[in-house]
Amino acid sequence: MNYCVIGLQWGDEGKGKVVDILAESCDIVVRYNGGSNAGHTVVVNNPQAPSREDRFALHLLPSGSVRPNVACIITNGVVVDPEVLLNEIKTLAAKKITLKGRLFISENAHVVLDYHKKEDRLREESLGKNKIGTTVRGIGPCVADKVGRSYAVRMGDFRDLENLKGKLQTIIEYKNKVFSALYSAEPIDAAGIFEKCKLYADKLSPFVIDTTEFLHSAIAEGKSILFEGAQGTMLDIDHGTFPFVTSSNSSSLGMPAGCGVPAKTINEYLGVAKAYTTRVGAGPFPTEQDNEIGRYLRDKGNEYGTTTGRPRRCGWFDAVVVSYAAKIGAIDAIALMHLDTLTGLKELRICRAYDIDGCEKTFFPANIARLAKATCVYDTLSGWDEDITDIKSFEQLPANAQGYIRHIEDVIGKPIKMIGVGPKRNQTISK
Image (tube, rainbow, N blue to C red; front, side):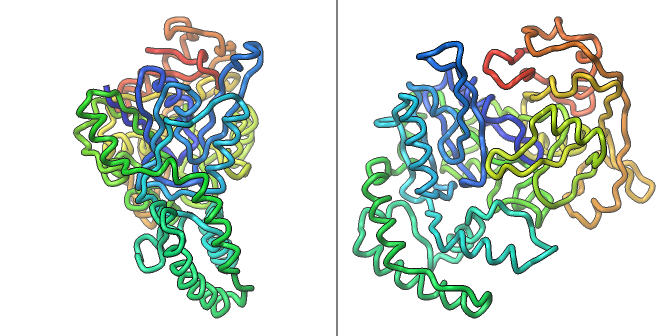
């Protein structure tokens, strides 16, 4: 089986846990989009001390990297921050998890360097109250350089340091003119950037290959591959709530371009959604609850960004969003995470449609001008008080929890095959 795991909301759905579980039966896990602005959390038992948990917050490494026998691929669709990647490799090594011989990075993946982060910060600061709310990790400026072509650095450039030195001189000379003219900012030192790149080249070049060739060879050999999407469908640069989106195609539509593998290679597209909705940063959020309910969800669900630590905005489950994401992503089934967070709420609400100019709409209007006119049409269900974190089967769930899940299935028209009732691997129900 080849799987593609995709977030169906605005990110933070629990994809890391789902990928980690599926990776047990896969040979290869592929990260194909985004950059260090993503944050996937995996919680596992420490092999040296089974009673203790290890929590890994991964930003560039595929979530399957914590499993020692899985090959991990970072493809051309990812923009790589070498400093972040080296720190993650070091973190895993400290837990006796080695990536030697099983981590492979595309030679065509673009590189995030210090001037990208500076440009990101300066641009956000200049926008004031109109800022997009980026993670200021340099992702947007790096992707802009990729599309612009003339000032781009790729992982393969680390193989020819002399040529890279001249390229960096040209790039940074241009960047400093922009920093000075637009922001009156201090210049970046080209020599310092090059010294860092020498270190990156020494440590990362052994991992750099043609990942597209690698994946096609693996497909020909019948290997089982898991493709891991970062962020969520509603942050897709083309199909999300633009301009409050990320800089890549974070839906399943980005998978073929992000790694050079045809979409029809996938046997199952698995969408991941929370049992409620969250969003980090600015942008539309129809079911947001900026009230006691929102605070309850944030505190109970520990809704703070893996990457930034920012508190997440929280609200009711938006079936319009999830069904839209499922449609454009060819989703076969859904993994519903964080069901346990809803425990204790007397009443639950599911947005089944938007009222726009007096008409009920069930297809999400990605244009935010139209979305601004939307009023949520809710179905109201009864909640439950029972602790569900140790439940192992769907039939053992409280009747109201079962009813909540079935109602979501009915509204979306997709089966829910996996249910998360806690952060650990074994706190997952197969349905």
